[in-house]
Structure formats: C-alpha cells, structure tokens
Amino acid sequence: MLTVFRKHAGSWLIKVALFAVIVVFIFWGGYSYKSTKASRLARVGDVYVTYADYNQAYDQLLNMYRRQFGNQLTPELLERVNLKQQALDRLIDRILIMQAAHELGLSAGPEDIQAEVLSIPAFQVDGRFDRQRYLAVLQHNRMTPQAFEQQLAQDLTLRRVEAFIKGQALVTDAEVAADLQYRFSTVQVAYAQFDPKSFLDKVTVDEAQVAAFFEKNADRYKEPEKRLLAYVPFVLDDEMAGVFVEDDEILTYYQDHRDTFHQEKQVRARHILFRVDAEASESEVKKVETAAREVLKKARRGEDFAALAKAYSQDGSAQAGGDLGWFTKDQMIPNFAEAAFALNPGEVSDLVRTPYGFHIIKVEEVRPEETVPLEKAKAQIELNLKREKARDVAYNKAREFADAAYAEGDLVKTAERMNRSVEVSDKALASTDLLPKLGRVPDVMKAVFSLDEGEVSDPLEWANGFVVVQVKSVQAPRVPPLESVENRVEQDLKMEQAREEAEKAAQALLDQARTLGALDKAASSAGVTVQVSGWFSLMEPDEKLKLWGEAAEEVFQLQKPGDMPQAPLAHQGTFLVCQLLGRQDPAPETLEKERENARARLTQMKQTQLWQAWLSKQRTIAKVEILQQL
Image 1 (cartoon, rainbow, N blue to C red):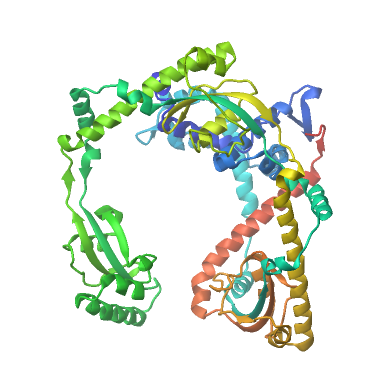
Image 2: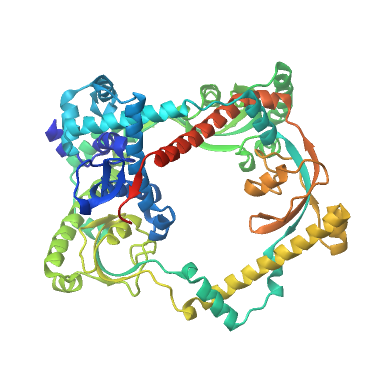
C-alpha cells in the first residue's frame, strides 16, 4: 500500500485523499500546555499559545488564501484581511471552546472518534474502512494514528459545541413576516442622477495641489515588490524535430485511449422556450401552452425560426436565435433530448414539456455516432506522443541546466558556457506581469516570487515547456516619484474634486426638493432631468436604475409617497436624489412561496450572530492575555 502511495503521490487521487484528512484541522491548529516563557505568545486561563502554534495556524491560513486567490494574493491583501490576527484569534477561540466543552459535557469520546474515522472516505476501499489505507494515508502525511485521533477528537468537540450554541437560535413567525414584508415589498421612485464625469470640465488643478494630493495619498500609488529576472526557456517545439514515434506506439496509444476516439451522436439545434413557473396553476399552464402552440404553427409554416426565437423565447439563447450549439443526448434533460434526437435536420418538434416550461425545437445538423478509425486519428496521436517525448527531453535538459546554474551561482554565465539562449528582463517585474517570450505564466511567477535574491529555480513548467529562472535583484514595494505617475495623480485629483462638485449639486437639488415638496418641480427650475423607475424590490432591482446594496436599503426605509432620503445616495460612482412615488405590499403567493426560505436565512443569520456573541462572552469571562505583540 505504501508503495502505491509513493508511486502515485503526485496524482489527483492521493492529493484528494490527503486533503480530506488535512482539511479537518486547517482552520484551527493546536496549542500547548507546556512551553518556554520566550515562546509564549498568549495565555488563555492556564493554557499558552506559543509561536510554534501560531506559525502553524498562520501557514495553514496563508495556504488557504493562496488556493483561493492565486497570484492575486498580495501583501496588501494579506494586510487588509489581517491574517496575523486571524490566526491568533482562531487559536484563542479553539482553547475557549474546548474549555467550555468540558463544562457543558460535550467532549468527544472514544466511540465518537472511532465512528468518525470509519466514515472518512479517504480511509475507505470500496466503501468500507480499510486499516491499511488508513495507516498509509496518515504515514504519507507524516501523522501517527494517535496524533490524528487526538486532533480529530478536538475537531469533533468543537463541532459539537458550535452545534449546541447555534441550536439555541430561534426565529419567530413575526420576524419572518417582517423580513418578507421588507424584502419583497415593491416601490417606485422618481430620481435625478449626478455623474461626477459630467463635472470634470468644471474642475481645474495646479501643480501644488497635485503634489499635495500625491503626498496625502502616497499609498494609493505604491508599487508592489518587483524582481529583475534572468531565465532560460526550454521549449517543446525546439525538441519536436529530434523525437520519433514508432507505429506500434501509435497503435498502443489508440487502443489505450479508445474512448477518446469514440464520438457520440451529436445534434445542433435551436429552441424557443415558454417558461412555466413550478407553482403555476392548471389555468396558467394552459394559457402558456396556448401561446406556445400559436408560435409552433408559425414555425411549421416555415417562418424564420431564429427570428421567432428572438421574438418569443424566454431563454438566455433567445438573442442568438435560440441556438444551443452542438450537444450529446446526455447533456440535456431526458424529455428535451428524446425529442431533439428523434428529429432530422430541418424538422421542428411538437411542444416538449420540461421542468422549465414548453419548448419548440428545430434541429439544424446531426453528427452520427462514430469511432474515429486509426488511420484518421494517426496524425493527432503521433503529435501527442511526440509532444510527450519532447516534454521529457526538455525537462531533462532543464534539470541538467538548473543543477549546473545552481552550482555555478550565475545563470547567465552557465547559459553562455552551455551555449543556451538566456533572457534578462529589461525591467523589474511584478508577480502579475507578463514574462517576455513566455507570456502570462502565473504558476511560474508564483514560484519565482518565493525565491530569495540570487536563487536559481528548479525547472518550472509552462504551457510550451520548462524554464529555469534566477532572481537577479529584488525591488521592495515602494512609492514611485511623482514624475512617473503625475498624469494619473492629476486625473485622480480631478475626479475627486468632480465627485465633490457632483455631491454638492445633488445636495442642493435635494434641499430645494424638500422645500418645494416635489422633486420634479425642483429639478425643473434647476434644469435637471428627472426619471421614473419601474416597480422594484430589494430582491429584483429596476433594470434601468439597478439600485442595490446600501442605496437600495435607504430607499426602502421611505414609507409614504413624497418621502425623500436624508442625503443624496452614493450609487455606482454617481449620486442620486430620490423621491418615493409609491409602495406596494408583497403578493400573497410570494409570501407563501418565500416563507420557508426566509425562515432558513434568518435562522442561519441568528446562529452566526449567537455564535459570535458567545465567543465574545467567553473571551470576557476567561482571562485572555496577549503576552507578546505580533
């Protein structure tokens, strides 16, 4: 079993198995009862958090963010999310929860641990727990069963406490009713919109203002860490001419990948969808069906199907004339697929009922099921095999070169000695920049930015081969001189002043509208255009106004027609002056349909609030002392 794990350690299967084990503990880490004074970071009662505990928790959180954000993870983002404090807070919370678990009698016992171990898929073979696999997975992850089960016990206990506390959250019928009323009521507003861009021509700035703005907002123009790189690419295309593929290799590949060369029957079709709500009454369904049959008659009379789809279809494909492209039978829901695959090119189906509603289908083309013969596939197989061999050759050359450059300490000199073409970036590069001659290679750049100055990388893979990189110099994050960003600073300053002017104009109109009691009168005297929205809710914004977030919530605080917000609303970079024209209660069927969803959402929200409040209280009750600053 261990041999299998070593052999396939890089495969997705083993990585998934290992991740399934590790993920149980990724958010918490451990803590220590015994430690030296110098290593102690915080104390929770009689339990100490050490730097070792903290570093482990920090690394786990950092890896989680790296997986989530990739190359977009910058030092600035890490600072914004306060990763250091997050890691420490999680460790402290874990200790508090474990202490409370003992008092509440919720600690996990041996039977609980055993049941959990038996249920983890990573430890199962054919759906049943396999002890050899269990030991192999743990050993590959450098964990003993004792250590794993101890951490698992803590994790189970943590989950029990969290479930117990969250279980106290209750939502009343009155709270559900109030939430539904707020979220699904509809309003209509009159509004005037002030866009800062229209005020730019009224703004002038001088050099002194630009310099002062730059000094005040220097961090806005701060450049990220950059690196000057020397690198040698090993390109697959350069090795293709030197590799050869035998006929028996092509035959073996064809036989081993037979499924790749089998093509299921495919259809390219258009459709027109008439949507039917899942809760629609029989009369509503009949009404939609009648309308659909009228369009079906037009389609069968030979009218342009694409034009009919654009005019009548309620599907996202309508603007493309209902074109669904090529698809196989198993890519569509059964009723739709059966109808489409029974048609010949040019034929139109009868009405087809699916959970979405009624469809009219027209088949444009059909590709029959076939297995691509070896003769037809041979050229592509040969190319695939040649690229595989070329990749091996390129890697071996890159490996040899990387070892030599590492030993010599100078990639450029090694390249000259080994007669390899070397590239040196003409300027320092950020981690998100293109690498000249290679293009956008995020995985390569991520690896390069983990190297120290002067360090030579291992062979790094990119789409067309491998590259060996040396970091020649590192430029720390810095604020550039004003001269290099002066145009940008000037534009930013102008836009900021234009925003101020737009807000002043909006406020002046709002003040006048309040005085007159009518937005349209105030706008008319000021020469400002007023628009009227459609009826919209918090859940379904008006298509033109697209009001959402805090601005929408401000509007929904208005109760009576004629009411206006206290101040202009900041919305998508503009300022709005609004007046409520009308308000409508939700339809009874909407209230009934959304009631359980609202209850579930409110329950989840209350559970989160209750859990955070409980943790905060535990911190107050317990003596949490920070011994050293991060």
